[in-house]
Length: 248
Image 1: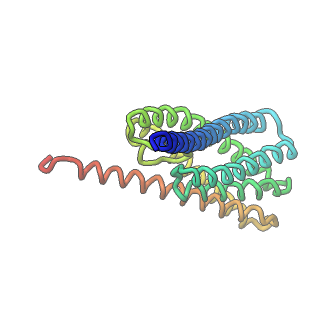
Image 2: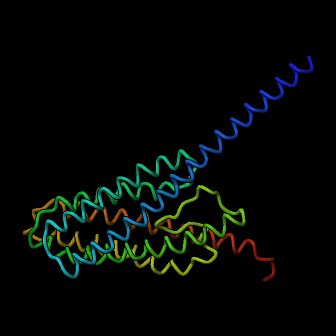
Image 3: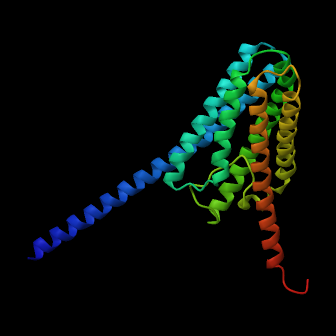
């Protein structure tokens, strides 16, 4: 009886350890996938930045622009697929930032199909300058957000599966508010792009449907990005005021 008791205790202990090891293995795979996602985002952002720089300053061929737009479509489509996996793994990504990538993929796809002509060439440099600025801001965000997330995880204030994002979230309030002017400038540039395209669409010689579709996409991006950022800032300022002692 003693021996059988010991055997059953040992076997149950072994099965518990196996279960824990299996859980640990799955957790490590989730962390590895998250790190791979972050690296993919950084590397592709740098490639897109260099490509946009080359197109803006040195190369002025439509097929090279098409390669850049194809890269953008592939990049945003890949992000949406990976983010759905990360959300199922426990990462907390706000709904707008996921939808934002769907809109960006659609916009890049429309830009890819826009035929070369006077209107395309008229908007080309504006779009490339915007892409260049956006890529630089994304690189800057990744650098500062990853450092901030590491510090907050160490303090136990953030979840291990939290990710860097292309916008502004509540956890960035401490230490990353200096990014807000760069983000708001990018948001209003999206508005400017949308309004420029709508002005083009009203021209009598405008026959391309891509002009108005790109204009709508830029306006959706502006509204979503701007309202989401403002909502985060407003919530943080409200909570800051409530945390102040009465009478101050």
